[in-house]
Image (cartoon, rainbow, N blue to C red; front, side):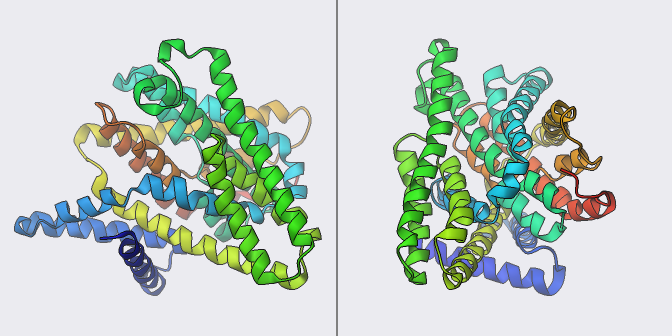
Length: 420
């Protein structure tokens, strides 16, 4: 099948599974599509087990592998999804939560990576650097999953900004940490550094700064240039097209320059969604641009969660891997708890936090397609099948269990006033 036929099939399946969810399951749209896709995949596996002559599992597995999930997400969808999510986070709200977001997206990601890495080195004997790579790819909260759930949870504004802002930035930071660690752990295949023994603190710090701060600077510059052009135009189709060019072209330019595409997309989206909306476009343009990106967000979310559901065909399940997955769920939740608690405790002498912040942000830190995409980019080797299975189990638990229970938990705990 060519790329157009694959895209057509995925859109048809997303629409069909979305309709099934709407009519029968009535779950939040993206989660429902993923669950229906997962059930359909399991049903196909069951049919293949009963009628092995059909060879359906191998056929579908080949199709799923050929989809190149990592490339589709990391090189195509991610920039648009992050830009769309950042458009709806206001800089004024984010500024009030800046220290919380910054500490969770830096210290929090680092703590989580180390906790997961060290635990799996001792528990399963995974080499430390490879275990740290797993820690980096499982630590980020997926902004796509998080922002989709936030729409249903109806959280108070300050808490919603903390979760949304942190998920947008810790994704970009964790991606950079992942690239750095992959460059050390897989020096011959990663293309992100020299040999592991030659990786000095200075070289790692330089790479991190180049990716993270360079991506933020590029996003700010491109966002401002696009805003400057929009101010001189009053033509909503053209302005929507400019925003699409910013998200698409800016992400690809960041990748070409070896800067962080995710951070570029977040910063550019924040700039256009705040400064651009206020000073760069008419009311009609704001209405159309907001509707366009909301629709893009919903469609790509549906496709992404569909892909997560069918990706089960690429995962090798066995007893050891499932035990590892169960352990990974527990460790990932504990690491998330630490990643949230330490920044909150650091800031407590300077500001007041409601008691529900830590439990809601811990349980609401959903993992998603980004973690699956990152683990699929690892070079083939002894540990990759185990890491893939553990990642997939964590993502399924996170989206299904945490995603469907965060709103009731927030309603139960979120009765305190909207403190900063």
